Image (cartoon, rainbow, N blue to C red; front, side, top):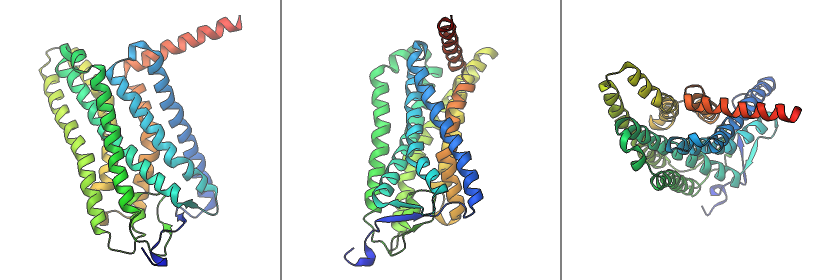
Length: 317
Protein backbone atom coordinates (compact mmCIF):
# COMPACT_ATOMS: atom_id res chain seq x y z
CA UNK A 1 0.00 0.00 0.00
CA UNK A 2 2.95 2.27 -0.35
CA UNK A 3 2.29 3.52 -3.88
CA UNK A 4 -0.30 6.03 -4.98
CA UNK A 5 -2.39 3.55 -6.93
CA UNK A 6 -2.60 1.22 -3.94
CA UNK A 7 -4.31 3.52 -1.47
CA UNK A 8 -8.04 3.73 -0.90
CA UNK A 9 -9.85 6.63 -2.54
CA UNK A 10 -11.48 9.27 -0.34
CA UNK A 11 -14.85 8.48 -1.92
CA UNK A 12 -16.51 5.90 -4.15
CA UNK A 13 -19.12 6.13 -6.90
CA UNK A 14 -22.02 3.69 -6.60
CA UNK A 15 -23.62 2.39 -9.80
CA UNK A 16 -27.37 2.01 -9.33
CA UNK A 17 -29.86 -0.25 -11.12
CA UNK A 18 -30.59 2.07 -14.03
CA UNK A 19 -29.30 5.24 -15.70
CA UNK A 20 -32.77 6.37 -16.74
CA UNK A 21 -34.04 9.41 -14.77
CA UNK A 22 -37.72 8.43 -14.95
CA UNK A 23 -36.87 4.96 -13.64
CA UNK A 24 -34.92 6.56 -10.77
CA UNK A 25 -37.89 8.73 -9.79
CA UNK A 26 -40.25 5.75 -9.87
CA UNK A 27 -37.84 3.64 -7.79
CA UNK A 28 -37.37 6.52 -5.35
CA UNK A 29 -41.13 6.77 -4.74
CA UNK A 30 -41.52 2.97 -4.44
CA UNK A 31 -38.63 2.48 -2.03
CA UNK A 32 -39.51 5.57 0.00
CA UNK A 33 -42.98 4.14 0.61
CA UNK A 34 -41.52 0.74 1.52
CA UNK A 35 -38.97 2.39 3.83
CA UNK A 36 -41.70 4.32 5.63
CA UNK A 37 -43.76 1.13 5.99
CA UNK A 38 -40.67 -0.65 7.34
CA UNK A 39 -40.01 2.00 9.97
CA UNK A 40 -43.66 2.36 10.95
CA UNK A 41 -44.41 -1.38 11.03
CA UNK A 42 -41.37 -2.42 13.06
CA UNK A 43 -41.61 0.52 15.47
CA UNK A 44 -45.29 -0.23 16.06
CA UNK A 45 -44.47 -3.89 16.75
CA UNK A 46 -41.88 -2.84 19.36
CA UNK A 47 -44.31 -0.33 20.90
CA UNK A 48 -47.13 -2.86 20.97
CA UNK A 49 -45.00 -5.48 22.72
CA UNK A 50 -43.85 -2.86 25.19
CA UNK A 51 -47.39 -1.71 26.04
CA UNK A 52 -49.22 -5.06 26.19
CA UNK A 53 -48.25 -7.15 29.22
CA UNK A 54 -49.61 -10.32 27.56
CA UNK A 55 -46.77 -10.07 25.05
CA UNK A 56 -44.04 -9.94 27.70
CA UNK A 57 -42.85 -13.45 26.85
CA UNK A 58 -39.56 -14.82 25.44
CA UNK A 59 -41.00 -15.12 21.93
CA UNK A 60 -41.92 -11.43 21.78
CA UNK A 61 -38.70 -10.42 23.49
CA UNK A 62 -36.84 -11.97 20.55
CA UNK A 63 -39.34 -10.47 18.10
CA UNK A 64 -38.50 -7.04 19.54
CA UNK A 65 -34.82 -7.70 18.84
CA UNK A 66 -35.66 -8.84 15.31
CA UNK A 67 -37.65 -5.65 14.67
CA UNK A 68 -34.77 -3.52 15.97
CA UNK A 69 -32.38 -5.37 13.65
CA UNK A 70 -34.69 -4.78 10.67
CA UNK A 71 -35.02 -1.08 11.46
CA UNK A 72 -31.26 -0.69 11.87
CA UNK A 73 -30.56 -2.59 8.66
CA UNK A 74 -32.95 -0.40 6.69
CA UNK A 75 -31.45 2.77 8.19
CA UNK A 76 -27.93 1.67 7.25
CA UNK A 77 -28.77 1.26 3.55
CA UNK A 78 -32.04 2.78 2.36
CA UNK A 79 -31.54 6.56 3.06
CA UNK A 80 -28.30 6.57 1.06
CA UNK A 81 -29.99 4.53 -1.69
CA UNK A 82 -32.89 7.00 -1.88
CA UNK A 83 -30.54 9.98 -2.00
CA UNK A 84 -28.59 8.44 -4.88
CA UNK A 85 -31.74 7.88 -6.94
CA UNK A 86 -32.14 11.67 -7.17
CA UNK A 87 -28.47 12.72 -7.07
CA UNK A 88 -26.38 13.26 -10.17
CA UNK A 89 -23.11 12.54 -8.34
CA UNK A 90 -23.69 9.21 -6.57
CA UNK A 91 -20.67 9.35 -4.28
CA UNK A 92 -20.17 7.86 -0.83
CA UNK A 93 -17.16 8.80 1.39
CA UNK A 94 -14.69 6.08 2.38
CA UNK A 95 -15.66 6.24 6.07
CA UNK A 96 -19.38 6.00 5.24
CA UNK A 97 -18.72 3.09 2.92
CA UNK A 98 -16.78 1.22 5.62
CA UNK A 99 -19.50 1.93 8.18
CA UNK A 100 -22.22 0.77 5.78
CA UNK A 101 -20.34 -2.44 5.03
CA UNK A 102 -19.81 -3.11 8.75
CA UNK A 103 -23.41 -2.50 9.81
CA UNK A 104 -25.00 -4.39 6.91
CA UNK A 105 -22.82 -7.44 7.56
CA UNK A 106 -23.26 -7.24 11.33
CA UNK A 107 -27.03 -6.84 11.26
CA UNK A 108 -27.42 -9.61 8.70
CA UNK A 109 -25.38 -11.99 10.87
CA UNK A 110 -27.32 -10.97 13.99
CA UNK A 111 -30.60 -11.74 12.24
CA UNK A 112 -29.50 -15.24 11.21
CA UNK A 113 -28.42 -16.16 14.75
CA UNK A 114 -31.52 -14.54 16.21
CA UNK A 115 -33.79 -16.62 13.96
CA UNK A 116 -32.04 -19.76 15.24
CA UNK A 117 -32.61 -18.59 18.82
CA UNK A 118 -36.29 -18.03 18.03
CA UNK A 119 -36.49 -21.54 16.56
CA UNK A 120 -35.14 -22.93 19.84
CA UNK A 121 -37.78 -20.94 21.71
CA UNK A 122 -40.51 -22.47 19.50
CA UNK A 123 -38.97 -25.93 20.01
CA UNK A 124 -39.21 -25.62 23.79
CA UNK A 125 -42.75 -24.19 23.59
CA UNK A 126 -44.02 -27.11 21.48
CA UNK A 127 -41.90 -30.03 22.68
CA UNK A 128 -41.58 -29.22 26.38
CA UNK A 129 -44.44 -26.82 27.20
CA UNK A 130 -44.67 -27.70 30.91
CA UNK A 131 -41.05 -26.62 31.50
CA UNK A 132 -41.14 -23.69 29.06
CA UNK A 133 -41.11 -20.96 31.73
CA UNK A 134 -38.33 -22.69 33.68
CA UNK A 135 -36.13 -23.18 30.61
CA UNK A 136 -36.72 -19.88 28.79
CA UNK A 137 -36.15 -17.66 31.80
CA UNK A 138 -35.18 -14.02 31.50
CA UNK A 139 -31.44 -14.50 32.06
CA UNK A 140 -31.18 -17.13 29.33
CA UNK A 141 -33.15 -14.98 26.87
CA UNK A 142 -30.85 -12.03 27.55
CA UNK A 143 -27.73 -14.19 27.05
CA UNK A 144 -29.05 -15.62 23.79
CA UNK A 145 -29.92 -12.15 22.46
CA UNK A 146 -26.50 -10.79 23.46
CA UNK A 147 -24.80 -13.79 21.81
CA UNK A 148 -26.56 -13.03 18.52
CA UNK A 149 -25.50 -9.37 18.59
CA UNK A 150 -21.90 -10.12 19.60
CA UNK A 151 -21.35 -12.94 17.08
CA UNK A 152 -22.70 -10.90 14.18
CA UNK A 153 -20.66 -7.85 15.15
CA UNK A 154 -17.38 -9.77 15.56
CA UNK A 155 -17.80 -11.47 12.18
CA UNK A 156 -18.52 -8.13 10.51
CA UNK A 157 -15.59 -6.37 12.20
CA UNK A 158 -13.23 -9.09 10.96
CA UNK A 159 -14.43 -8.84 7.35
CA UNK A 160 -14.52 -5.03 7.31
CA UNK A 161 -10.96 -4.83 8.63
CA UNK A 162 -9.63 -7.40 6.17
CA UNK A 163 -11.45 -5.79 3.22
CA UNK A 164 -10.14 -2.26 3.79
CA UNK A 165 -6.57 -3.51 4.28
CA UNK A 166 -6.47 -4.78 0.71
CA UNK A 167 -4.38 -2.72 -1.73
CA UNK A 168 -6.75 -0.82 -4.02
CA UNK A 169 -6.40 0.04 -7.71
CA UNK A 170 -7.37 3.33 -9.29
CA UNK A 171 -10.97 2.26 -10.02
CA UNK A 172 -13.35 3.81 -7.49
CA UNK A 173 -16.64 2.71 -9.08
CA UNK A 174 -18.57 0.19 -6.97
CA UNK A 175 -20.97 -1.71 -9.20
CA UNK A 176 -23.62 -2.12 -6.54
CA UNK A 177 -26.47 -0.24 -4.84
CA UNK A 178 -24.48 0.06 -1.58
CA UNK A 179 -21.08 -0.86 -0.13
CA UNK A 180 -21.63 -4.61 -0.21
CA UNK A 181 -18.57 -6.69 0.62
CA UNK A 182 -18.29 -8.68 -2.61
CA UNK A 183 -18.61 -5.47 -4.64
CA UNK A 184 -16.00 -3.61 -2.55
CA UNK A 185 -13.29 -6.28 -2.73
CA UNK A 186 -13.49 -6.18 -6.54
CA UNK A 187 -11.74 -2.80 -6.28
CA UNK A 188 -8.58 -4.45 -4.94
CA UNK A 189 -5.61 -4.73 -7.31
CA UNK A 190 -4.60 -8.15 -5.98
CA UNK A 191 -6.09 -11.61 -6.29
CA UNK A 192 -9.10 -11.67 -3.92
CA UNK A 193 -9.98 -15.35 -4.29
CA UNK A 194 -8.79 -16.00 -0.73
CA UNK A 195 -11.07 -13.21 0.53
CA UNK A 196 -14.01 -14.68 -1.34
CA UNK A 197 -13.27 -18.10 0.18
CA UNK A 198 -13.10 -16.50 3.63
CA UNK A 199 -16.46 -14.82 3.04
CA UNK A 200 -17.98 -18.12 1.95
CA UNK A 201 -16.55 -19.98 4.96
CA UNK A 202 -17.75 -17.39 7.46
CA UNK A 203 -21.11 -17.32 5.70
CA UNK A 204 -21.35 -21.08 6.14
CA UNK A 205 -20.49 -20.74 9.84
CA UNK A 206 -22.77 -17.78 10.57
CA UNK A 207 -25.54 -18.67 8.11
CA UNK A 208 -25.60 -22.43 7.61
CA UNK A 209 -24.90 -23.34 11.26
CA UNK A 210 -27.94 -21.39 12.52
CA UNK A 211 -29.95 -22.78 9.60
CA UNK A 212 -29.03 -26.34 10.59
CA UNK A 213 -30.14 -25.58 14.16
CA UNK A 214 -33.40 -24.18 12.79
CA UNK A 215 -33.95 -27.33 10.70
CA UNK A 216 -33.18 -29.63 13.65
CA UNK A 217 -35.60 -27.66 15.83
CA UNK A 218 -38.37 -27.92 13.26
CA UNK A 219 -37.78 -31.62 12.66
CA UNK A 220 -38.40 -32.15 16.38
CA UNK A 221 -41.33 -29.70 16.35
CA UNK A 222 -43.03 -31.40 13.38
CA UNK A 223 -42.43 -34.82 14.93
CA UNK A 224 -44.08 -33.66 18.15
CA UNK A 225 -46.99 -32.01 16.31
CA UNK A 226 -47.74 -35.22 14.38
CA UNK A 227 -48.03 -37.11 17.66
CA UNK A 228 -50.76 -34.80 18.95
CA UNK A 229 -54.08 -36.66 18.82
CA UNK A 230 -56.37 -33.65 18.56
CA UNK A 231 -56.68 -31.96 15.14
CA UNK A 232 -57.28 -28.66 16.91
CA UNK A 233 -54.15 -29.22 19.01
CA UNK A 234 -52.08 -29.89 15.89
CA UNK A 235 -53.48 -26.80 14.19
CA UNK A 236 -52.73 -24.63 17.21
CA UNK A 237 -49.17 -25.97 17.55
CA UNK A 238 -48.44 -25.43 13.85
CA UNK A 239 -49.94 -21.94 13.90
CA UNK A 240 -47.61 -21.12 16.82
CA UNK A 241 -44.60 -21.65 14.53
CA UNK A 242 -45.99 -20.55 11.14
CA UNK A 243 -44.91 -16.88 11.35
CA UNK A 244 -41.35 -17.68 12.37
CA UNK A 245 -41.01 -20.40 9.73
CA UNK A 246 -42.19 -17.99 7.02
CA UNK A 247 -39.58 -15.40 8.05
CA UNK A 248 -36.87 -18.10 8.17
CA UNK A 249 -37.58 -19.21 4.59
CA UNK A 250 -37.57 -15.60 3.36
CA UNK A 251 -34.39 -14.42 5.11
CA UNK A 252 -32.23 -17.53 4.74
CA UNK A 253 -33.34 -18.13 1.16
CA UNK A 254 -32.23 -14.71 -0.07
CA UNK A 255 -28.96 -14.87 1.88
CA UNK A 256 -28.04 -18.34 0.58
CA UNK A 257 -28.65 -17.24 -3.02
CA UNK A 258 -26.37 -14.23 -2.46
CA UNK A 259 -23.43 -15.54 -0.41
CA UNK A 260 -23.23 -19.33 -0.32
CA UNK A 261 -23.22 -20.30 -3.98
CA UNK A 262 -20.06 -19.74 -6.08
CA UNK A 263 -19.48 -16.08 -6.90
CA UNK A 264 -19.25 -16.69 -10.64
CA UNK A 265 -22.77 -18.13 -10.80
CA UNK A 266 -24.39 -14.77 -10.04
CA UNK A 267 -24.37 -11.76 -12.36
CA UNK A 268 -23.79 -8.29 -10.93
CA UNK A 269 -27.44 -7.43 -11.60
CA UNK A 270 -28.58 -10.53 -9.70
CA UNK A 271 -26.35 -9.57 -6.76
CA UNK A 272 -27.90 -6.10 -6.75
CA UNK A 273 -31.45 -7.46 -6.88
CA UNK A 274 -30.91 -10.04 -4.13
CA UNK A 275 -29.28 -7.41 -1.90
CA UNK A 276 -32.11 -5.00 -2.70
CA UNK A 277 -34.77 -7.57 -1.82
CA UNK A 278 -32.99 -8.39 1.44
CA UNK A 279 -32.54 -4.73 2.39
CA UNK A 280 -36.03 -3.56 1.40
CA UNK A 281 -38.39 -6.53 1.29
CA UNK A 282 -37.61 -8.54 4.43
CA UNK A 283 -37.82 -5.60 6.89
CA UNK A 284 -41.20 -4.68 5.33
CA UNK A 285 -42.62 -8.20 5.41
CA UNK A 286 -41.44 -9.33 8.86
CA UNK A 287 -43.85 -7.16 10.91
CA UNK A 288 -46.66 -7.92 8.46
CA UNK A 289 -46.08 -11.65 8.74
CA UNK A 290 -46.10 -11.56 12.54
CA UNK A 291 -49.13 -9.26 12.62
CA UNK A 292 -51.31 -11.06 10.08
CA UNK A 293 -50.52 -14.64 11.11
CA UNK A 294 -50.42 -14.26 14.89
CA UNK A 295 -53.61 -14.21 16.96
CA UNK A 296 -51.89 -12.74 20.03
CA UNK A 297 -50.49 -9.82 18.05
CA UNK A 298 -53.82 -9.20 16.30
CA UNK A 299 -55.57 -9.33 19.68
CA UNK A 300 -53.09 -6.82 21.09
CA UNK A 301 -53.69 -4.53 18.09
CA UNK A 302 -57.45 -4.64 18.67
CA UNK A 303 -56.98 -3.92 22.38
CA UNK A 304 -54.69 -0.98 21.66
CA UNK A 305 -57.02 0.45 18.99
CA UNK A 306 -60.00 0.06 21.34
CA UNK A 307 -58.16 2.00 24.04
CA UNK A 308 -57.12 4.65 21.54
CA UNK A 309 -60.66 5.04 20.19
CA UNK A 310 -62.02 5.29 23.75
CA UNK A 311 -59.47 7.97 24.61
CA UNK A 312 -60.34 9.86 21.42
CA UNK A 313 -64.05 9.84 22.31
CA UNK A 314 -63.34 11.12 25.82
CA UNK A 315 -61.22 13.95 24.45
CA UNK A 316 -63.91 14.79 21.90
CA UNK A 317 -66.60 15.04 24.58
